[in-house]
Image (cartoon, rainbow, N blue to C red; front, side, top):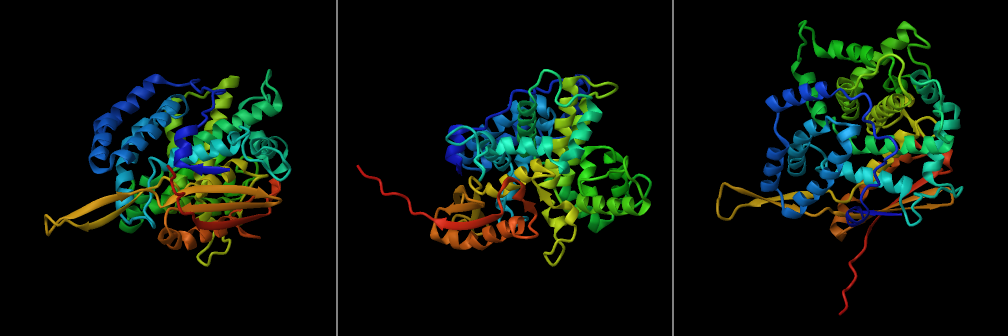
Length: 450
């Protein structure tokens, strides 16, 4: 299976249509939130005009294409995303030209491209069934099976049945309902998985300057407990309890104190967890979930809460590993039979290296004090994956020999951190994949013949 920006343009994202998710939207609350953002924030049009001035046409047009699709889909799935988009767009330009992140990254294209990979893995490919596993089963079918039948995912089924007493709801075929639910949740989580970067930056600043809350207490002393109280009975709490008992089932003071500390660390040192909190809070702010939920409301709430888990866990790898790159918090390890959603999102995030531009700087010959910025196409041309027996083979293809040499170690180290045996961040053994290999290649372009 092959992924590239050209194929993204051709195939796009197969957006789900089963769960429209307009249920419980409070349009007055949406109007109030929009008013706040319009008074204090940058408008989408302004952000786009600034981006157009600063970037080449090919890159600007690519962002416009990708974010138009994302906006159309977010109308019901995450309506307030459009209020965050101006900051995403402005940060995108800064991410590419400023070395505040290793290798320089982008997000306006990366998030839709990650959703495209998820779409292809689950429902794409030549046979339009997605990635085939060693058993011959499509990946989406296996993910539905993990959700429905594995003991490790019982917490998901229990959580759904708290929202609605029938699983699957009456009138649905069990496997079909599970596949549609999983697919919808995966696309949402992938499309918005990096919205937490601004919060990560603020938290880094706050930890250095001693930002205080309204009571005059250091935020570092109180944020973990406040967040704990917010998510205590939500699906987002389960990974902190190793995907098992949560406070409503088993509660001890020492256990909860440890969880509060882990929550505080995740909030300050990742972008996934702040993004998940923002996703939950903004959705909670404009949806009314009270009393006995209807079937559609329950589906909507479950999808929202499960997507938040995928957003949080996609970069929890750095909390999983300690300073010596040994598993410091094994509770955060992802496995297909416990959290298939987060496995898919994290894997797609690692696969998505193409379509990510870089920038070079040079002195302006017409101004001895000026600097010119030139944008380069993505060093990575495409990603190819193949399942051979019980091995997943990942190949990154680069445009030049120099790029291959420059990025080879980084790609191989990342794959090792995520999949190495026996303690990699992601365990795919439940779906028959016991080894993941990485190759980094330069493939010269074919000579054109007349």
